[in-house]
Image (cartoon, rainbow, N blue to C red; front, side):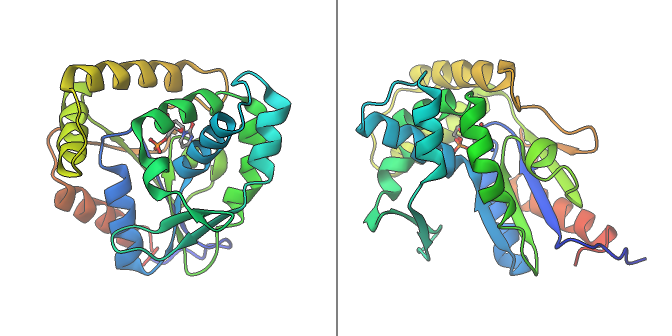
Length: 229
Ligand code: DC
């Protein structure tokens, strides 16, 4: 049965980093021909700008101003969209582990989250949106037609990240990565606002056991069964 939805469809993909969220979301968006929101990039950019402009990570009004005025543009890239900030390509800097850590700090600031909320919601356009983040199904799109929450143990996630970074030629340390992941999980899941947790109606998929192709198949089957495609 096809359900007549009034809003363009959203597939919300949430979970901690290293669970394959980004890869899954990109694949789904390409397969469905839908728009794609990598919400982590927004927090990463705010963290990066705060660092560049020496804004303290507890200066909420200044952080919120940075968030509200992000001169951000996505341009088509080979594997994923390239990220531009006022015309400067910042994709590599945005993806650094150190930028991820800054993002995790600024993401705990309610003023920053508030400033980014509308911007994310505006991306809900036909034919649909795949939204990747931590609070897509709980806060940004609580009425998303399909909510996925990916999990995996910190050890497996650290190993994946290690291989990914090594493959890109970075000098990385597995034990340090695992420690960083644990720290970031703690901060992201314990914060007072929009903590990392599955929505009550999310489908939880454990990627310790499932490969990315299998996860993609399951999500596509769920999308069909809900009349989204
Ligand atoms: O997914 P990522 O690694 O790019 O996210 C970077 C940080 O941003 C992460 O530590 C938590 C935060 N984040 C968030 O709080 N809410 C989101 N929707 C996306 C990311």
